[in-house]
Figure 1: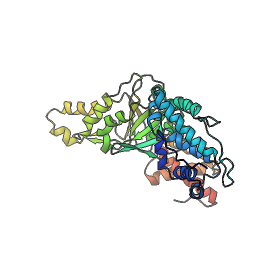
Figure 2: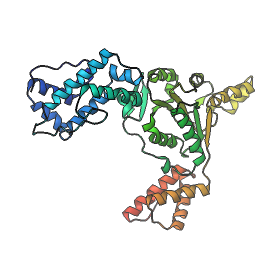
Figure 3: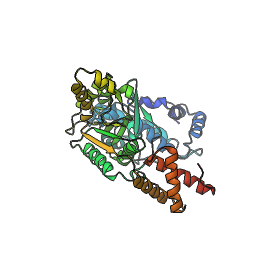
Figure 4: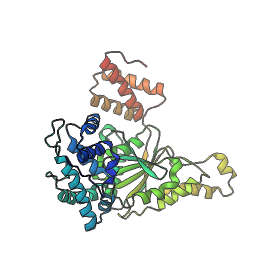
Length: 386
């Protein structure tokens, strides 16, 4: 063990991690007992080096931010970062023969020989392609109080899970491909009845294109005023962000209407902007309007035009139409096939129709709920009852 304290320059943020702190303390003082406790408590005794590499990889610092912007770090910053890596790797090497745990192997993009200079060179390209910090591993974020907070558990839905609506999914997918490829793209409004799969389609797109640099920032209606702030937060990030406003509807005189218009107009769809605004709504024109509003308006045509102008600012509008009987039963059948349901198909159809009647209508959501119920009953060996 070493008897000199290691002082990090760029990677000081690692000291916030309790296992890393215990590790460096054990190296500095030659007293590994506290380190072993933290090691076992974190479950890292079989792959400590992998844990260490991930910790370094996800640290947000001057080096990772500079590389993510596509800039070349200065020689001073590069040398300081490489020196930090060498100091950490040298400390790890002192535990190579420790019988209490397995050091494990470094993970890409770190150099397998634990060389700080070569690892730092590899990370320049990695951060430029994958962003930095939490953006590397998290798919979705929420925006509150000027910060982007990761969402740990996102929907695992895939496009194959979403039956029918193929034309709608293709329109959305093609637009996202343009967005990711630096081509002209459009902000999107997805509208239609509840349960038709609008939100699920966006989450499925996120899962499909995550590895190509797509991320989502979920924005509540109350925070629509913050769209410009979000643009500034991610402006220098190499990734592409969908600002997702789910189930959007606004009152005619809501001050958020003008703010959202400004946010939509602020998009530069020529390949330089990395933010796309996507909203879902149950109404085509988003803004609620009562008959009395129109009657009391001095200029009813102007009032209607004002409401239409918001939805018109979405360059791509995709309608998810209501589900008729044939489509509903088709979705039920496809889900049953995917799930391996053995139920008699004629009986399944009759039950599915009764389910829709009981639940108040047909939709892909109702079909999925029904298929889940049948699958669970079949696995338990009991009759389907509702």
